[in-house]
Image (cartoon, rainbow, N blue to C red):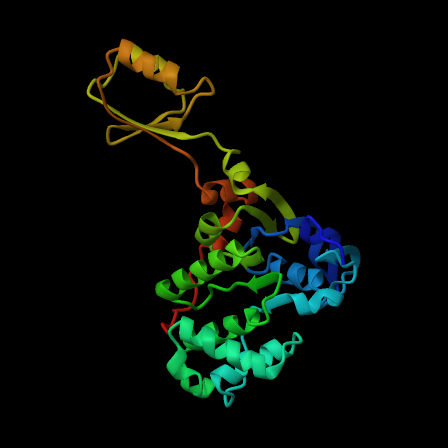
Length: 315
């Protein structure tokens, strides 16, 4: 198979379940070696899109390619996939569970056990290698399943809502693992409804709402759709400098908040100085990915993204 610039591609994917359209004309291109996030509230079509691109289910129309293969299942052994629905055999020992998952992708069981023990040791679970899954906490079991996803050293790792149910410490560990795998050249794709994870990790994102792609591109491109926000406090409550502030500038408790004018900060600063504003504080804040998501997908989708998850359990 020849090398390709894109690890995953989707072209006008449509998926209908009866009279419900779960995916509606989705097109994506995930660059090889990137950390790529698919953002959207629950029910937006993220999981269905991933399953189509991996060849797990067929689209109603459209096409997908995986690691250069027009038939995604042909590349299955080069992929690690962690589905949203977690599942391990409760009586299987942790090291054997990792080896078993590797065997499903073509890794010899003996080698899988060796790598599994090494991975468990590396992630602080070495003492649990020969313990049944039922004896592990939820956080530990999720870590075991994640290690099973990458034990065969895939070229592409796809994680569906991987942070769900993890406490803050284990979320941090997962972020570190994602960065480490990406640094070794592995392409990482993950879906999430937690924007902060995508903002910290991703180079590119797709925002999906109601089965459609509302945005696809670099994180900076999404943020640049909004102008920077200025926060200003002055000693003088009024004066000629006020003419430099936009008409919709808000004053809350003595702090002015407004979008940075298209002319940039220099004319604003000059007007404030020449007009005797007496600058106490002046901050220019670049909008975050959450702000961009609201602007692109709307307040309703953002509220759904912000709904709290079930209480996480620590490892």
